[in-house]
Length: 368
Ligand SMILES: [Zn+2]
Image (tube, rainbow, N blue to C red):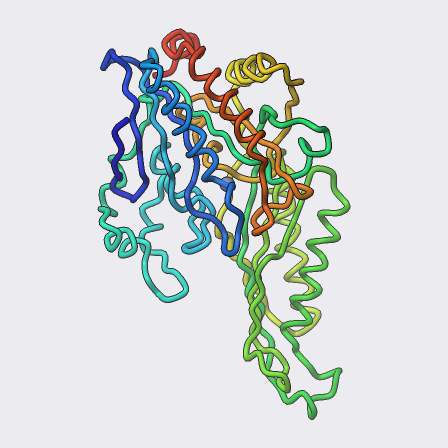
C-alpha cells in the first residue's frame, strides 16, 4: 500500500489492483474527534481497513479492485464548524466559503490547511464523482443497541439527518442588586426557556432528538444580569421532514420567547445534512460476511452522522457498526471496544472485501 497526504491534509492509502483500470472502492473513516473524546470513534474505521490490507499483503493477495483507505480530517466540525468537510470534498459537495471560516483564535480554515502543508485552493482535485464503485466504513456504534442485544457487529440501514443552529440572544445588562425582577431583560433566562423548549419538543416526537451542547454567557459576572447569550442546537432524525419541522418550530418559538421577555434573538443555521440511506446490496453483502462468522445479523440505523453519509449522491455506501462498551458511551474518554469485537469486525470487513465483486456491482448499479 502506498500512502500520502492529499491537498486538504487527509491521509490516503492505496492498495492497487493488478489491473490499473480496475474499479476503486474507498474505505476508512475520520481522524479528528471531539475534545476529551474516546479512542475508537473514527480511528477504528481506518485501522481496521489497514489491518485487512496487512492480512491481504501477507498472503500476497491482490483484490480485483483498488482499495483506498482514507483517514479523513474534520468530520466532527469541532474547530471550524464545517462537519464532514473532507468527505464532502471527495463527494464533490465542498463549499469554498468554508475556507474563510475561522476557529476560536481567528485562524482560518484556509491558513490551517496551508500551515499543515496542504493546498486549500486545490480542493476541486479531491472530487471523485464517477470514480468510485462503493464507499464502505466501519465505525464504533456510539450507542447501546448492539451491547444490549449481545451482538459484536451490525449492519447500518441509514444515517440520520441533522441540523445545527447557532442562537444568539440579546438582553440588557444590569446591576444584580438594583434592577427589580419585573424590569429585567435577562438574556440567560430567555435562553433557558428556549433550551427547555428544545427538550420538550423533541421528547414529544418519535424519532427526533435535540441537544444544546454549548452555551456562553456575557458578561458572565456573578453580579451582573446577562446581556448576551449564545447557544448551539443540534437536532436529528432519520426522517428529513421531522428535523426540518423542528428547525422551523424552534425559530418560531424562540422569537415568541424573546419578544415576551423584551429580548431579541437571531437563529443562524450552521449545518444541515439529509438522512442518507445505505445501499441495499452492500448491506446484504455485509450481512453475509457477518453470518459467515456465525453471528446473528442485526440491522440498525445510525443516530450519529458519519462521513459515509455524503457518498450516496456519487456512489453506493454501506457501514458496519461495532459494539460500544460502557452502556454505549461515546465522545467521552470512557468510550470502549473489546479486542475480540475489533477482531470480529475486522474479519467481517476482510471477508466482505475479499468477496466483493466491484466490477459486477458497479455495472449492476450503473456507477463508476
Ligand atoms: Zn465518528
